[in-house]
Image (tube, rainbow, N blue to C red):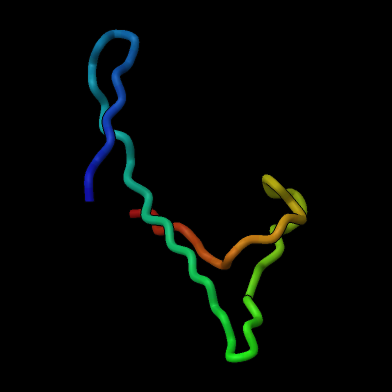
Length: 57
């Protein structure tokens, strides 16, 4: 896995944190897909997405 770097206004490079992100599409034999609705109070609340998450070290 590669790391990303960003150049600050001073020209110094700083490593960005690596966040592992996972998502899955579950499809049953009838072709139905499992989706999760984003909770109220969260960014893009009420919209639908594939279940997933982030892993922080």
